[in-house]
Amino acid sequence: MTAAPHPVVRPAGPGRATAALAVAAALLLTTVLLGLAVGSQHESVGTVIEVVARRLRLGDPHVTLLDDQIVWQLRLPRVLGAAATGAGLAVCGAVLQTLTGNDLADPFLLGISDGAAAGAVTVIVLGVGVTGAVGTGAVATAAFAGALLAAVVVLALAGARTRSLPTARTVLAGIAVGQMCGAYTSFVVMVLGDRDAARGVMEWTLGSVAGVRWPTAVFLLAVALVGVTVLASSARDLDAFAFGETAARSLGVHVERTRWVLVATAALVTACLVANTGVIGFLGLVVPHVVRLVCGPRHALLLPVSALVGASLLVGSDVVARSVLPDREIPVGVVTAGLGAPFFAWLLWRQGRADGRAQ
Image (cartoon, rainbow, N blue to C red):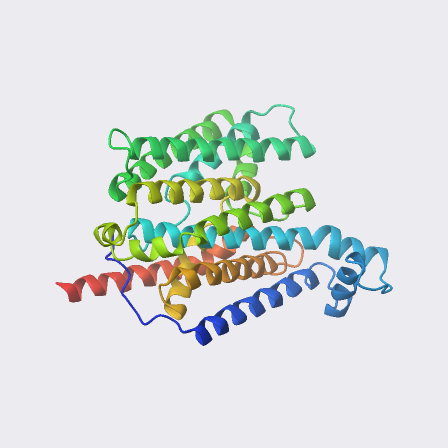
């Protein structure tokens, strides 16, 4: 479903932009502290600050070894990984919505999630004897390979002959590749897998940051930082795209080249994130719309605020996922879907009303 370009609203002034960034940053700081404090064993905010200060050599506070292990070794990499993933998915969603002119676009529009699931299922179900840390790394590697392969096939199909990326063809190619990957995944799980394999596949496809440790967290942070920087550097070109391809060309934007670079970057960033956290849906759909309603459509403000809000939302969702039940965690993808699905329904209803008025 292709929507009209986003309506033009009055740009946010410097004061409003600064306030939006400050509020989003404060929200992220609050959720990070909450994520470090809340869990099976609650830690006070004071203890959290003392542990971090000790590790950063900002003093010599007296903290117990247990507090240090819980806050620094277990929770902080998990929180940072969630923040990086949320920021990356939110920014990729905002960029793809603008490039495609589709309000319902998200980072998985290009079949990336289905490709990642196909790669992960191949190892989970067929990876005989691959267990422990090696197994975890193999699943992430296979998921990345599957996601990247799916994105490459989509871009190749969409850009065949013309070497451009028409919006409709790109979306249809993503749907086709996603369906093929989904059929492969279902076949492997139902025909070649057993009950344990099916459960492992379901847990992975629902998304989780529970297994993120420092090496993975550093990788996710690097991917998010580089990806968001590259995408945000094209904010002015994205502003032009919001008015349509014809307007973008008249403003001097090289439409085909810019779309190729930005779509490929979004696909690569999403593939790296999904490979390590599983499929976390709706976040890239919901966050850009919420931020656009508050801050307006200018991407110089939309993208950084989306990154901060997306990071906050996933960190907060992870806190809910590990604290809503007393004796177990639920996949974080369940929480984000619970938040995103009602918004998705409201968006469809709102778009239907707008189409009705236009007629």
